[in-house]
Amino acid sequence: MSSSAHDHPEIGPAELHEVADRVFAYIQPDGSWFINNTGFIVGDRSVVSVDSCSTERRTRAYLDRIATVTAAPVTTLINTHHHGDHTYGNCLFGDITIIGHERCREEIIRGGLPGYGGIFEPVDWGELTLAPPTVTFADRLRIWSGETPVEVSYVGRAAHTSNDCLVWLPGQEVLFCGDLLFNGGTPFLLMGSVTGAIEVLRSVLAPIPARTIVPGHGSPCGRELIDTVVSYLTFVLETAQEGMKAGLSPLDAARETDLGDYAGWLDSERIVGNLHRAYRDLDPRRPDVDLRAALADMVAYNGGRPLPCYA
Image 1 (tube, one colour):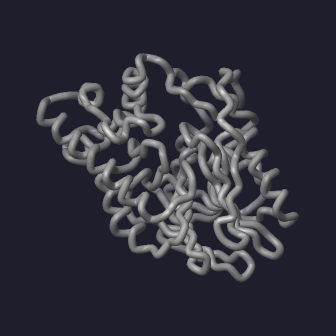
Image 2 (cartoon, one colour; image 1 turned 120 degrees about the vertical axis):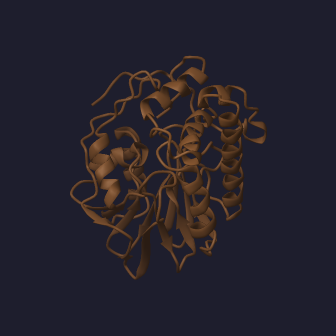
């Protein structure tokens, strides 16, 4: 499916980082809405990819970049979670094995192809078909890229989404963590849990002895980003507590909040969606979050303008 796209300022080409021997992170600036990171592990005869991209154009550019490194085919694709920026391009990899958590498959099928009318600026998604994981797991599994073990594990509870997974290369000490971490961008918990994300970052990510972390958006980093994101999520919970005490809606609480050190992060309107989720985390008796209404509140926070999307 396709639509006309707005013209956007040039935000720079994707960058390829060899973060360990034969392990690559594909970093797409500027990391804002639907501009994600992927990565790949090169074996002797095949390639394992971590995630795809959001549009046909971006995914084809990623596949072309892989081909500059190796002539080996991509035979396995791992989805770190179900969001479209990491999965819409699955269909362009051909007839390969796609791995994801059980709920990742369910959510991709439930969500379908892009349909964000009025929320985001128009995007040229290209010609896409739905391609959910063909191999699913409940807890963890190990795959191999040549002689390199690749550990894929579910984080155990809702965090960024209901189905976040880690891709850990113990021999290279490299961790692909999907959208559990954003580097320079505002984390987004609307479809997961703020309290759950804090627990996962502290108890699941922090103990992993990663030398390099590839976040879902933004540059590869070290373990210090975990504390930075936990600090932001703690700020969200404190803001939610104050807003609930004052009887404010998530939107009104966001409008009255000084983002302080986080104001310069990309996509600051995510504070609204994060507060919607935090209100529900803090009071489970509240009705579950209406995702469409929360997204509409983010547009309202943005002055009634659709959210900028450069995908």
